[in-house]
Length: 398
Image 1 (cartoon, helix red, strand yellow):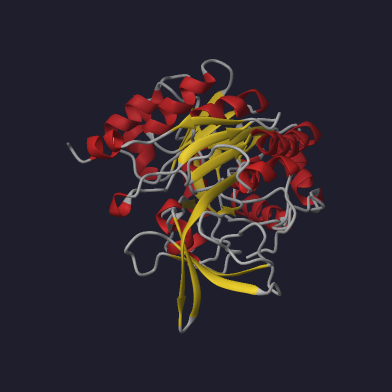
Image 2 (tube, rainbow, N blue to C red):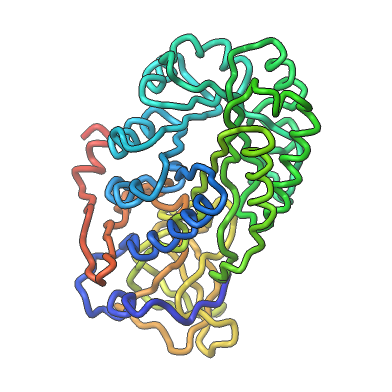
C-alpha cells in the first residue's frame, strides 16, 4: 500500500463528518476525473491519436456523461455495456467492441450499436462478421506473445492465452483478404513504462512485415493497461516511447491509432468511505470492524492486496487491522497504522477506488451496495444512487 497523508481540501468535510453521508459510500470526484481526462487529452493533442475510455473499469451513467465530451468514444466488452455507452454517446463519438466470448444474438445486437468491432479470434470473425452493420470497421485482436507482467492472473499474453490470435495467424488472415481493416492489442496491466508498448509494436511490425503499412489495414487500437501517472500520483513519466510509437503507426503506416485506457482515467478519482462499527481487542492486536466489506472491492480479496487508506503511515503509533462486516473469514483489508486511535463512528476513507471496484461489488451476506455520491468541482456532495432492499429482493426473485 502507499502512504497517503495529504488529500484535496474538499475531502476534509467528507472524512471528518461535516456533511451528511450514508456509509458505505462510493464517491466519484468530478474534479479528479477531469484532471485525469486532461492527461489523456494532452496525449491525444500531442500525438493525434484517438482517446477512448474502457467502460469495463467503471460504468456509472452520470460519470460517463461527465467524461464523454472529453473523449472520442468508449470501449465496451458486452451488449449491456454497448447499450449503456451508446445511450451516453448518442451520436457524439464512436463505440469500440471486443470480448473473449460472443453469443450470436449479442453479436447481432451489438453490431448495430458499435462502430468498430475487434473479434477476439478467427472463429469469432468467421462466425459473426456477417451480422454486423456494413459500416462497422472489422478488426481482429492480436496476441504478440510478449509478456511484461510477472503475475499470470493479470497477463493477457500468458501461455495459451485465450485473448487474441498469434501474429502468424493474423498474417495469414490478412493475406487471405478476410475483410479485416484493423487490429486490437491489449498486452499490459498498470504499466508506466511505455517502452514496453514500443517493444510490443516493434514485434508486431516484424511479425506482420509489409502488411502493417501497405494499406490493407486502416486502424490499430493499442488498448489499455498503461497509466498516465505513477502510484504516487507523479505524472513525470517518460511519454517519449508512446509518442514515437503513435507517430510511427500514423505517419509511417497511415493507420488511425487509438488508445483505450480504463484505470488511467478513473482510478485515483474515486473513494470508498466507511464508518467504524466496533473496535475489538484480541491477543493478536486491535481490529476495527467497518460497515463496508471486501465484497465492495473484490479485487482486494481476489488478488490479496491491501488498498490505500487515507492517513495510514507505516511508522504511526496506533496499529490495527481493518476488517469488513460480513461472516467471510477473509473479510480483511489489511494492517494499518494511524497517528490517532480509531473510535466507533469514525470514518475511514479508501483511496484509488475508481477502477474495477464498483463494477465488481456484490451483496454477499445481503450487505447493501455502497451509496453512490458525486463530489462536484465546487465541493458539493450529491447523492446519485441509493440501493434498497427492493433492489436486493428483485435480484433474487422476491
